[in-house]
Image (tube, rainbow over all chains, first blue to last red; front, side, top):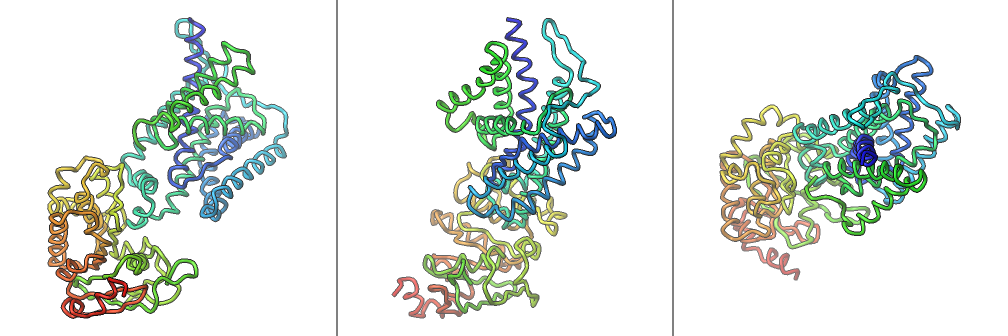
Length: 287
Length: 226
C-alpha cells in the first residue's frame, strides 16, 4: 500500500512537469497546426544550458533561469520566424521533416560541445527530502510540481483574460476571422512558439537538478510529450495537464511494480489502451 | 486579380462614396468574395489599385487596413465559437486604433443589439444564426469600422431576421457608416442599396442606381447565367 502511494505521489510530481511541457506543444499546435518533433531536444538544450552555466559560473539551475528563460524564448521566436514559418504553408510532412531535422541539429550540437557521456548539474535542493508519513519526496520533484502547476495556472489566466491570450485563442478557433479583426496571425504564431520554447527553459531548470543527461535524451521527452498531448486532446488545457499526470503515474507505477525496462513500457501500454477506447483523447471540455 | 495564376476578377472598377450603401450583386462564383477579400487585404491583387480617401492602400497588409476602418463581416459570420459574446466583441476592438475606446464602443454595440446583452457571457457557438450575425456585425463595429463590408449577411436566416438585420444596417448607415453590401439576394439588396454593381464571371456587367440595375435586362441574365 505504501509502495503504491509512494509511486503515485512520484508520478504526480513528475507528471505535472510532463503536463507543463506538453502545454507548450499544445499551444504551438493550436495556433499553427505544427507538431514540433524537436520539442524534447529543446528541453535538453535548456538542460545543457544549465549545465554550462553551472560549469562556468557555478550557477544553480534555478538561478540560471534568469539567463536561459529569455535566451530560449528568443531562440524559439527566431526559429519559428526564420526556419519554420517559411515552410509552414507547405505540405505537413515537410514541416515534420524540418522539425526532425532540428532534432539532429540540436543533438549533434550538444554532442559537439558537451560530449556524449552522461553528465549532471548539481543543485542546492538536490539532496533535500520531504517526508510525509511514509512517503518520501525528493526536493527537486516537489519544486518542479509546485512550479509546474503554478505556471499552468498563470498560462491559463493569460489565455483567458489578456489580449495576447485572446489573440492566441482567436487564431486557434478561426485564423481567418482573427486576421479580419486585424490580428497578425504570423506574429501570434511566433509568440506562441516563443512561449512554448520559453516554457521548456523553465521545465529544463525543473528537471535538471541531479538528473543525468545525454544529448540523445531529447527523443524520450518528445515521445512522452506526444503521448500527453494526444491523451489530453491536443489543445485542451485541463486534458493536457491530466494527461501528464496519467503518463507520470503510469511510468512511476511501472518502475515500482515491473522491472526497470518493462516499467518504461507501461506508459505506452496505457496510452494505447486509452486510445482504443477514447480515440479522441480524454477531452470533455473545450479549448 | 486571382488565386495563383488564374484570374478571378478582370478589369473591375468600383467606387464607394462616404456615407453610401453600395450593393455588390452576383451569382455564386461571380467573384464577390474575392473582391472584398482584396479590399480587406486578404488576397493581393496581381495588378490594379485600391485607394481609401485618396490614399493608396493596395500594398497595405490586412491589419493595417483594419486600423484604417476597412472591416469585413465575413460570409458565414465566423464568430469565435468557443468564446463568449463578450470576448468576441473585445477581440473586435483589439486593433490599436480601436482599443482605447473599447469600453464605450462595447456599450454602444450592446445598446444597438440588446439581444447580445442578454447573451453576454454565453459561448458564441450556442447562439442562433441571427444572433451570430448580430455578433459578427457588433464585432466589426468594435473594430472601428468606417467602411463596413458585409458578405452575405442574409445567408441562412429566416425572412424576419433578415429584415431585422437589414434594418440595423440601414440604421448604421443613417448614422454615417459607409456600407458595402455583398449579396446574392437581388431584391433585398436593391431595396436597401442606393447604387449597385452586378458581377458576372469576374467582371462588372451592370452598374448604376438601384432602379437602373433593377430594370437592366443584363442583371437578370447575370443571375440566370444566360
